[in-house]
Length: 245
Length: 320
Image 1 (cartoon, rainbow over the protein chains, first blue to last red):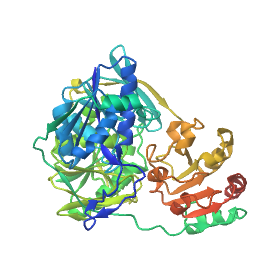
Image 2 (image 1 turned 180 degrees about the horizontal axis):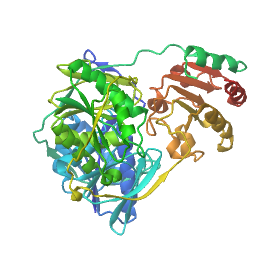
Image 3 (image 1 turned 180 degrees about the vertical axis):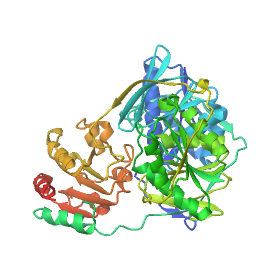
Image 4 (image 1 turned 135 degrees about the horizontal axis):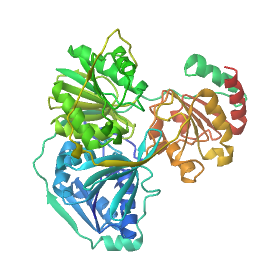
């Protein structure tokens, strides 16, 4: 089975979010870029399955400008075999999914994190599946290969299901797919430098949505503190002021 | 033309979020002078379907077809798109939950529409069509314009009030004509936790962090949750240590929740944790460290020993 893991290049999760250009653009000054946390878990699981002998090849792909290559190299260091960068500025989800479709059509299993931690769209995986006519499974928290067949666990409200699904398929994965993201070892980092990273030109595609402007949430009022021996007062505030008890 | 809302059911029942979704659609439809059609897929009794009318649906399309029970994404998307076409729906609304997130992007591609997910309010304008959504994992908002004629939205949970109306919905049996060979998902086993309040449904969530010191101390949190009918959650270190199951982890990479009251015990409030809970209406922090960042996010707090606070709190809420 050939696996494609989609990698979104996102600001480090501790980044202080700021906007520039009259709140029309995200301020990338000084931002550290990382593999989207859910994509990193997806990749970790793919590498584990490859080590167990179930996968022939893992490719990682993203849509981005050359600055994103550092993130792809990190994915190679974690254990992917090769990388593809589609040379384009990622616009909206449909634009990105259309770009990825030209690459993903040749794979049996596509893995993508349930959302990217920047624009929180949760859309590229499903769109890609629909463009290619692949099935998709969302909220996947477990993946195994048993006798050459893909076996998945997915989260449903209040529980989990074990399911079989035919390939090719796009799996949209979340926490649980792997416990901790794999940290690249020095050997992996050395090897990653020699692994192939192919740059593919973008295809013509539409953008269907546009980010007009951004805003930060209003500052929060100061926390009202109650003495530790006066829990009664806390309960009163929650009942009478907040009206939530 | 119409607005179509996909109302998921849970073992034949709707939830508050189903009615929230219909209320939202109705408020939008009133501004556009359009009717709301709800689409229900799965076995739901007539009385239950009628309830959608109470929140503003004028028509309910009922697809009582158990082939969809496997939640096959491709088949569900085909069914919703079929209904959208036959209702000439210009706006299609899903919940921003597991199923909504799974199907909405597929429907958007099928109908050549534009999708915005995790919308938090009614559109700011209809021409151009602009909606507000959360970005950067709840750290900011964006205003997004949808260009194509067909607009597809997923609504963030707990972002719209329920509004009851005098409407009476007409229920129609509907066949979305999805062929057998479209379905390719087979459910082998379903494990559901019963008797627990689901975190995504809970109005109050009680949450424990590393300050709880160990899994043996969770009894008091469970007791408090029981009395309040609250859901129980934890921070990432707690689930990573195996003190509690991963299904209870709330935060950026765990579950994202938006209860009315989020009650934390011994949680410091790392930015990744706050990313999953900052949509809560009120946050209460109990932590011994006055410098803990949770106090910047909290509305009410106690700087002190949670093991002294918890028993008092249990006594107080028992009196309510």
